[in-house]
Image (cartoon, rainbow, N blue to C red):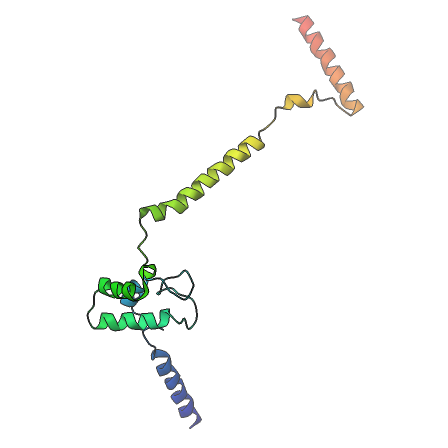
Length: 158
């Protein structure tokens, strides 16, 4: 009997999880239209991507979009109805090529400026400014003198 109760409970939970409204699990069509409408709750997201839990605008808007699409309205008609009801500020135009290029171009220009700055600041200095290297060890000085004497003798023999 206990096993039957737990199976029944699991079945009820599964049915409750699947019983979602259009706002909780929007269809592809609702997300497509909602992506072109700005949420009016104060966030900068679209109706389709509003991340605010229990949003007072996006949840009813998704349900309204689903109802309008179900009766056969086109995407443009749904968007026009929202613009008529909430004003032109609700409409999000799809990004054009300029909107896609600007962030990457800005990042490239910024990287180039940083590289030019680093090349100018960290320019390698020639070693001549350091002066002649003198051996600190007296044994090395002794060997150096010996090498110079022997190389002078070689020059005389030729």
